[in-house]
Image (tube, rainbow, N blue to C red; front, side, top):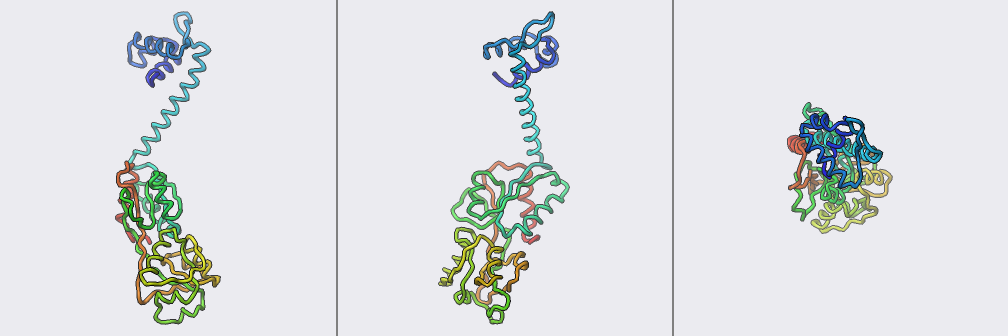
Length: 296
């Protein structure tokens, strides 16, 4: 059984006449009759019976037609969707990103991309997670593009640096460090520290800074992102060493800049190097490259 046989069967069932169906299908009547006969032989059941000069479906043919109609309709739907996805002015993009980008960067980037006339019909799926899970989702093709920390030893992934985030100390309002000059990274040793989850990209990054400076801060809690850290710091559970992101201004904390070291955490856009990309995905990657650091 092949797709042509299903189309032929459907047309004969609609017109109930071999000659008319052959004309509509632009094939010879003997070829059409032979195709239907082969289909009946394969199914082991008669699909049509004579009705005067015409033919009509048997009760088994009626049952088969119901299924054939559904199959061919699904094929039509699938074809329409694939054509829409392949259209440079349409298509769908699955994005994953780390939590700090949720408030400003991703919404601004996507909105500015969609405000371009050629991209206005593109649709997006947006998902937040830690870098480790985003990398896994990218490799399983759950995501087309992700935004997070750099991960070494991933040769099949292209990492493009897009944002440099200054690392700062945050404290509760009125904390003694507020009036200390200068603020140095070793000040973290004097207080309990609210840290990132050590398995996250920023968790690994801050731990590497501690190792480089031969420090072992007292980590009171590990949390997934800056919002969780700032919430605990505002309630005086400790101080934080975090990326300087816009959402910190929403919390009752002091933001203190380091004087002796100026560490920056880099956020990357990442995608599979050898993946087959729809035009809309490639257009978005190109758009992000052109607007690096503009919207954050």
